Length: 188
Image 1: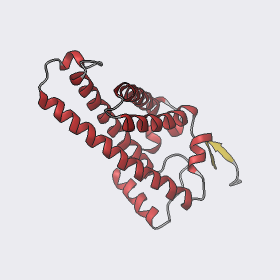
Image 2: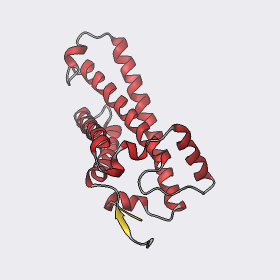
Image 3: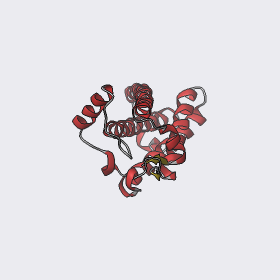
Image 4: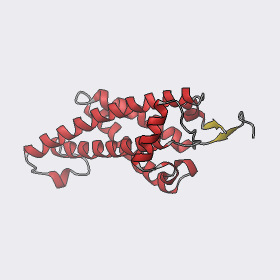
């Protein structure tokens, strides 16, 4: 088999939602309290993308499905240790550490989105949770704001680790993972 042969790995839904999610997170993070309408719309788009990604993780293309890349944390940890030694197995789709990162990011973004909806419902009496949160105490608002801020900052840490992992894997396996997330192709 020729190593220069390319194969389609990432479908358009995965690629476009990946980049749109990144842009929306940046917009939401930067806009925070100053531009609430933009912040809220970025959050709604993020939540929509999360729902679509979870559904696509069940019914989507081969490398988009969770069962293609979700492994145990111990396998992901071993893979990360092997990466530090520069001797990892190459995966056509996500590697075990990348799979664990996807799950961590999905959970973090879900918690971020839910806490944002709670804050929006309490402070602005708007959004899908507004009726359920009418008359909530200030303690719930304060708690939700702390949770929201925690998960926003955790997401920044995860993004940083993700970027380091992409760079490391690109160097170890001599492939441009950013380009493959743009065009969908990787070397076989």
